[in-house]
Length: 81
Figure 1 (cartoon, helix red, strand yellow):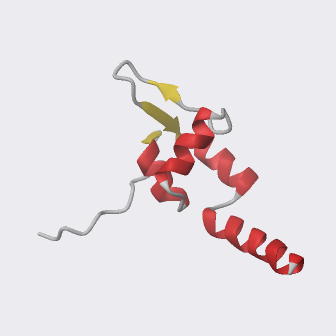
Figure 2 (spheres, helix red, strand yellow):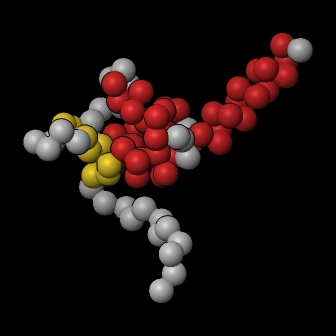
């Protein structure tokens, strides 16, 4: 049996670490944008949060993935030099 991490499976809801993996962001970034209300998350009775697939897709539509964000802002920084 392999110890490799399996990719996140598509489903109705994800944990914050799963969203981080899906979008290519560090988990701290996902926690921050959820805390800021920029990415809606439902608080569960156990205190954890879950994020709907629809919310993740909306975020991608509005903000893209981490890679597209980095490439966009890298170009901005290069123009400042």
